[in-house]
Structures are given as C-alpha cells and as structure tokens.
Image 1 (spheres, one colour):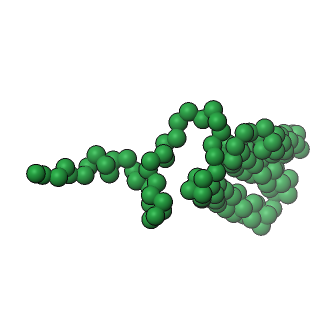
Image 2 (image 1 turned 60 degrees about the vertical axis):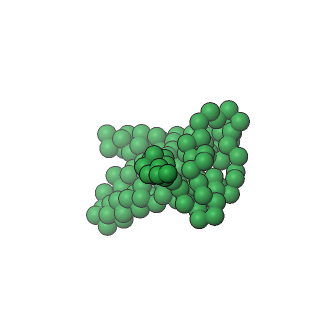
Amino acid sequence: MNDILIMIIISLGTLFILLAAIGLLRMPDLYLRMSVTTKAATLGVGLILLGLALYYMETSITTRVIAIIVFLLLTAPISAHVIGRAAYFVGVPMWKKTKIDDLKGMYNTKTHDLMSGFEEEEKPEAED
C-alpha cells in the first residue's frame, strides 16, 4: 500500500512538471510563463521530493527533503517576482490581449520607485 501511495505522489509531481513545461511553451508572454512555471514546477518538485522521503523513510533524508521543500517554497515565488518586476521595468511587452495593467503610471523611471495608488489621493492640495 505504501508503494502505491509513493507512485501516486511521484506521478502527480511529474504531471505538474509536465504541465509546467507545456505552459512554458503555450503561454504567450513572459509574465504568464513565469506564473505557470513557478507554481506548477515548485509543486511538482515538492511532490517528487515528498515521494522520495516516503520511499526511504529515514530521518536524515526526510529532514533534508523538508528543508529543500521549504527553501523552494520561499525562493521560487520571490525570484519570479523579482524577474517579473525587472522585466516590467525594462519594458518587456505584455500579451496583446491583456486588459488590465495595474502598474501603468505607478512607476517612476528615474528613482525606480513604485507608487501605491493611495499616495496621489493623500497629497494635500496646494492652497492659494
């Protein structure tokens, strides 16, 4: 029964990695590609590592697997965010059918600061 559970978990992991690879090829722009690959590949690798921890059932391997999974969950979204932000600031175009650009007009090209949108509303008006 344990072997069947391990095969299911590892198979699901490989399926998510396959979906990430397909998404990388099928998505139209950098931002969507990053979203698909970050989420699906992180989940896929995490499931494969979980299956390996269940297979070996040793404390040293399980602690390493948990450490790797935590490291992946912490670093993959952060690195995708940084890459996406850099791509946006450099001017990598969005997909032509993208309807909403929440950052448009919020980025100062000289200081590389993002405004929150509330900053303009909170500015006191000049008195005459």
